[in-house]
Length: 197
Image 1 (tube, rainbow, N blue to C red):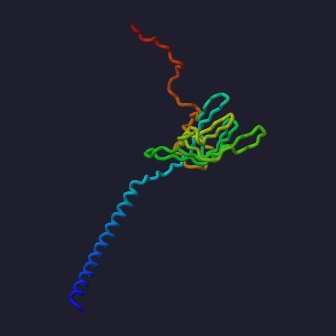
Image 2 (tube, helix red, strand yellow):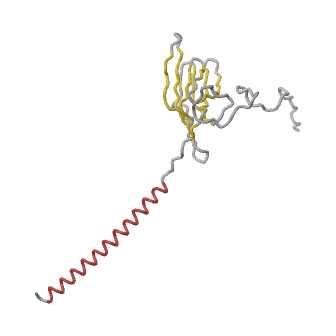
Image 3 (cartoon, one colour):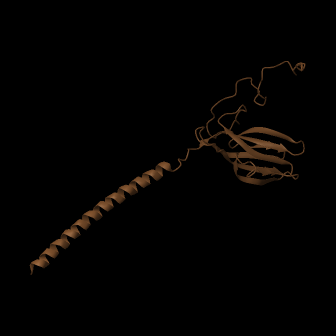
């Protein structure tokens, strides 16, 4: 074997060893970059807030004949009648106050027909943020979800088995009465307009 071939062979082996070291360094750099990218993506991804299961769903109902809008509380699993409609919430979820609001409820609504037959007219999710999207629109009555609560002034039904209630009705308090503003004087006395001169 000649000396020039041995020198070339040594050079090729040295070049191959250098290329192997470069490839090893590149792989470790790429691995570090990949781990950094995954960590950055997981930190920037939105965290999903846990849902709060509420025992009370708050609805608004419109009676199109009288033009009155009524707000009423319904416990989960309880059926309440509004006009010819029976409303039964199955779940009512909200998010913690530190998160963006999202109030959802799975609701079933039945209509009592003129023949005293019960007919399901709605079974699905309602979103308080967009009541027009998933509200019950009936020829006489409209119903939509407005909120979910942890407690109500309305006492729970005797056979209530839903999520825990975080409050009670004070003894002797009328659960259907509105808030007491502390004024018993009736309508206010009109005042004279200030002098303008």
